[in-house]
Amino acid sequence: MQSEDIYAKVLVDKDSPYLKSIILNKGSKDNVKIGMAIVDKSYLVGKIIEVNYTNSRALLLSDLNSKIPVLLEPIDIHAVLSGTGKNHGVIEYTKDEYKQKIDGKKIIVYTSGYGGLFKSGLPVGKMYTNNINKENKVNFFSDFRQLDYVKIVSYDIRSGN
Image (cartoon, rainbow, N blue to C red):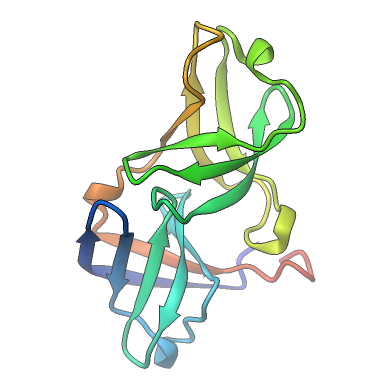
């Protein structure tokens, strides 16, 4: 459950080959804090990494430095989703051998809640594969190049809200 939602306009889309971030028109005066989730519709797109009084910067999931704990459903495997610098992510760091389990299935990727960054169950993207050797690519549900307005959401992980 969200403790507070803040709607923000995307002011600048910093599209360098390495840094995938956006500047938002909400800042500390609006109760924006570092670590808050950025959501487009109901889909996770990033997190707040810098805040000043009137605006803030969010790192998108597609950034090379972005790594978030995720759950692959319906096969129930935990992994880490890493940004690639492109408009997709890749699955890394699974302790289970998952490639046989995903063959021919549509896999939905959700936040797992591990690490205390985001609450569990936020939809992130999907994987399609018919080939076991295929890249572990996740197509994000949101097109980060088309973000105009986003929701900044605070989740209190400790209380479950």
